[in-house]
Image (cartoon, rainbow, N blue to C red; front, top):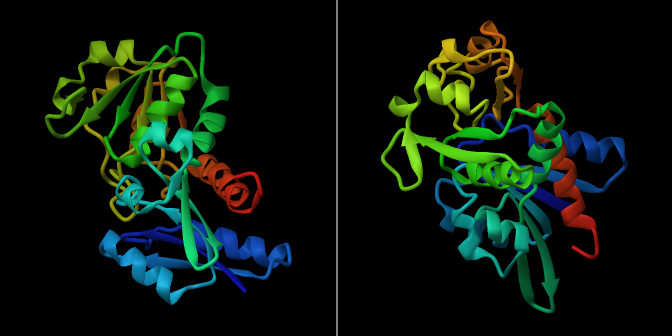
Length: 249
């Protein structure tokens, strides 16, 4: 039986294990999907040794950037993004080959593109982790300028305290790439001047649990279009399967 899995920490919120095992059962695929909750990226080697039938992995927080140094190959797009969330595992003789891809960018761009209006020329990206890198790459590919927002002083970013109503009026698209507002802390949201939003504002939250985060609720109150990350998650999962199984990948 082939095996696939997810590495990250923590994994209590994982969607992938249910999605893929249901897919395998429904389509008669002789495979299993497991969660590998590892407290340190160095534990990857142990996972590989203990599961010699692994064909592929998904990668989530906090390892989308750290995983790169463990790979033998990386797709050009994932290299340009600087983050990996899919690993294809193959074997050449006794050597195990790990190749990294990024399906987040594909899932995100397909999900957000139908919502973009003519005036959506600039976007704020909340967060600076591996997911935010894919979102930045995806928005730029759609012709949208981006500005990162962080809690900390970082090069090329602004802090939340600098997000004024004027900036909200200028940056009509706001994408939350942080875990702020994720269950069980659903009563939290990014600190923004929501009252400056209007019916031309688009809020996209990568979180999908709860269905409507406080970030989305506050924006919708002022007329903003809102969307959660469930469709992106489904689309990136489909793409993960393609990366694992297409011969030319």
